[in-house]
View 1 (cartoon, rainbow, N blue to C red):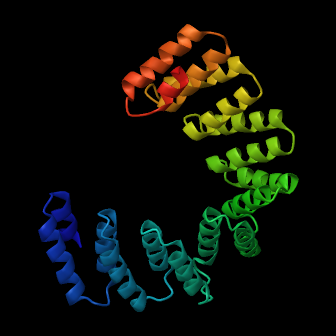
View 2: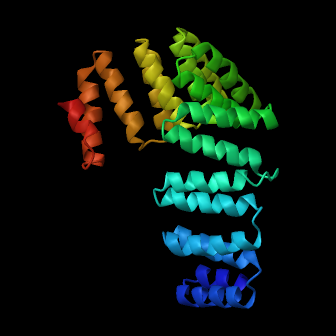
View 3: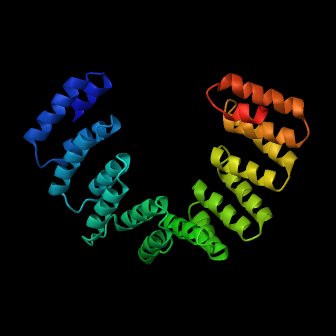
Length: 278
């Protein structure tokens, strides 16, 4: 598919399409061409055409998790979570080992998005049965337990997720939430700070930490954390908003007003600055 890629790189879309279609016709058993063309179609939101190609590829290689995962992502992009779950079940029913844990966790993730936490927890248990140290399985299990109100049990799994995969932001975020839920906001703050030591430029962690400081009325720490975020990302409206709110709580209304006015000037289509200023 090198000519197809070259045509795409040089903006010759019609030539690329013609080349992909020629290769697929001439080599019907070769999945690489189908997958490459399907990925191009997916990026351009031609989901039905992409799905047709992936379906054909699966017929050639029915045990390939990579292909089934492509199909799942297409269904999700189309807003079809039930079809995505059916595709995952079709793969899992094959009892194929390669990709099984990934498929279980993908299914658990989709179920969590649908707020089916008991079923999501079941998928995490099945995944942990195959890979007891899998960080994402512990993360899913911990999140499910937290949703069900079992904060202390959630902490065990979320801490395991953090220790196993310290580069994963969600481990720190949900561990902090579980600690706060269990009555330990100070430990939650320490966990987020530990996450930022590992991932110093992570916006989600820094935003979470600011909000915890604000809940605990640690306004100066909240302000310093927001300002550090702005040093790393000067135009980030989330950090600007939090800085303005914190200045207001620190009884510095003129500085807060200046922040909110700058937000309105920079992002006139957003409502946050108007609400805060009002």
